[in-house]
Amino acid sequence: MIGRAWWFCPTVLLAFEAQKVVELRLVRLAWGGQDARDEMVSMVTEKIAAAIEAAGTLMGGGSFDTVVSRYREHVAANTKRLATMA
Image 1 (cartoon, helix red, strand yellow):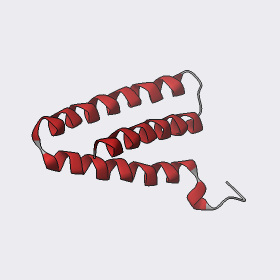
Image 2 (cartoon, rainbow, N blue to C red):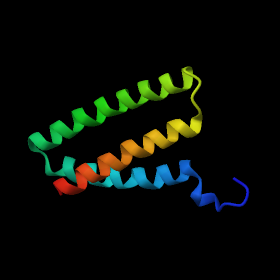
Image 3 (cartoon, rainbow, N blue to C red):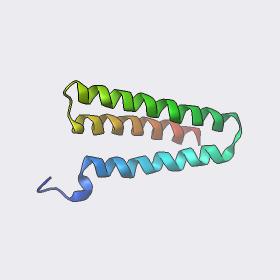
Image 4 (cartoon, rainbow, N blue to C red):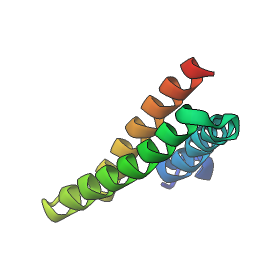
């Protein structure tokens, strides 16, 4: 990480990017109704699937960077999906 700004670290970027998903999900939950219930189920299902995927990657000899990169892909997909619903 020497030579790069600390905020460019992929884990820091993941944290910032995830905040947008949190914001969009909170809005969806605040609306209530079936959409909110569906989003709650989606949140739990996605988190379990992502954790299993990450564990599999690490147990298979994958790197932490690979896991973070994949989580960022999931976050980007959620941001896109939730932003189009708003």
